[in-house]
Image (cartoon, rainbow, N blue to C red; front, side):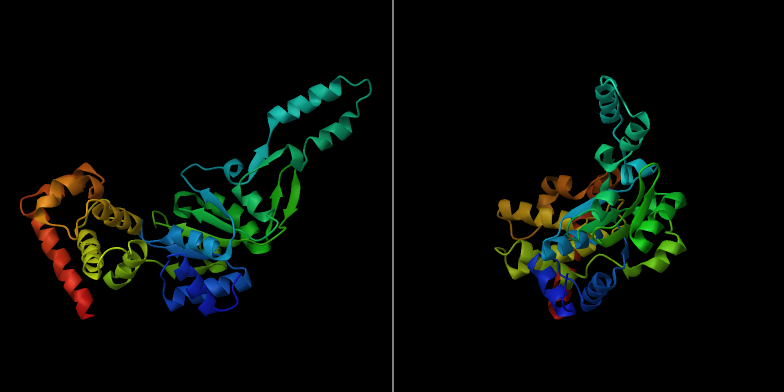
Length: 302
């Protein structure tokens, strides 16, 4: 996928993903050694985006398994298409001579199996990016099922048999830390802690995505992001939400956020009623705007 750490860094930059040397090095080593990367950190800090950036940088497809509480192996691996199996039985039953044992075996082959994202990732003709998102939402039994895939790149599927990888995917596991990921998966993976970006890094991200705005605008937006994330909101803004806000201000032809813009911008920033009420507190918005300005000044000084 990559020939050097420098190539990782430069190709991710082209996709709009700004990272530091450590992350670029881990991505390079994970690709070379066929090891998963476990990314842990708060929601909206850019964990999922790294997987898509690697895919864009390499021209690979993304197979995404979105985890949720109660997910089962059928959702992840796939299942037999019972409708197609019944149709095959009906068609064969019209024949005068039916080899039922042979038909039974045929019904449990891959043409009758609808693959889920894990199996599709193993069967890609060229390596893809396998994103297993929000792994902290599943239980330990589901984690155990993943170990075979991530250890020996094969899957044992009841009635279908052993499926070995046609190609080995680049695997990204993400966790918002709602539950601690088990040690077996941790030992198998390279680990990266992902926090919200510093104002300096967020300024660079904003510059890439809204190149038509001024340097002062980008610094102010990065300062606002830091101020909002320091307000103990229920849903602090993600990087993508700050990019949405920056693009909204660009459409409104505004260079900076002022105290008078509170009511217009609240729907873009407050994602719960509790957060909306908090930002509506007397002098709350004005204080937020002041903090954003101070942080933007610090960005210049650093």
